[in-house]
Image (cartoon, rainbow, N blue to C red):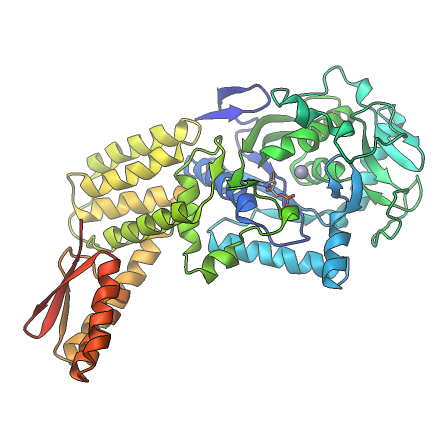
Length: 486
Ligand code: AMP
Ligand code: ZN
């Protein structure tokens, strides 16, 4: 499998460090607000990578932190702790906010069929680990104490900028407009490992340390949590592209200074989801969440399909019409799967192997998910029986995670129930393209009832509503036939 590695800026063959485990680490959410669908784009694509590795037979162990302390409003250690801001906004304690938004995050992940990592570790649970690492960095001269804080000394490194294909603006952390330079720093990119002094003295959570009562910087948590659960090396580290600098750059600096050797082999970064006004971000407000999608009647899995239709290394623009297209495509996919008959024919191994080869070619090529989705459509066209088609869909969906088999079974069951109900009433609803649809059947039964009650206006309204969805009706004795306009 080829995977693009941001650290080398090339597509490389993926070779894990150990035969018995693939060590994967993901930066988790900062739990001061709901995750927006931009954050979730990153988690969906990381989930696809994990699922594909498992599909290939690799035993994956994946660890994720939950950022519940130390992430300041600027990634360059300036401003106020985001958690505190969230707590003040909602008149709750920091820990209440953390618990509430952590639960909300995993509820969203469940709806998007994102697997929960094997280990999920809140940052506030590992204070001793940060102190141990920072103590060694102090002892070895990689860290210094100034003005009440402990800083990492980036001038001690031969190479600090690892992902150095970012634009100069992004790299100018210390001189961003509106951000005052921290005078305690010896070098512009030095970063805080432990705070005891900040302009925001009302920090809620503080711990004792050799440098005074305070709290950890944001970057140290990921290095420490990764090492705690995965040891001294890491195969793949994931995150959104905004984390590459300074967060991941600082993780590498402090981890390798601490360990004295290379730490992580592959860096996978997911590009941004942009709204029409630019990058979707929690601090901007007005962002879209999974709940927004549901309130507007979208299936969260239609958003997953929307993400799969683009490559993870391209920026994506979110618009409602784009999501409408994905929702339509998702509904049709489920209907096509529902129309396949389980148990129709013997499993055709040769046909399955041919489809599998195409699927793997797409995924092995740095996760070309859009092409992998096209292979799903190829399955319906393949010259083989329904049993084999269903086996192929089930196999590929282990990776794509669209819950196609499950949704199709539910659809078939609902259609059978509706058919039984319409049979009892001696009224048949017949889908001409062979794909029963619960919602259409219900609408057509309502139209029958309206006609019976001589409410012709209502019957016409239902016909028009279906027509607007591209559905044509033909009344027949004892029922109605319907089909989608092609
Ligand atoms: P945060 O909760 O801010 O710590 O971010 C959680 C994850 O979402 C990180 O991996 C970020 O890099 C990623 N992320 C933030 N904004 C976006 C966006 N607009 N599109 C894709 N990923 C994002
Ligand atoms: Zn991180």
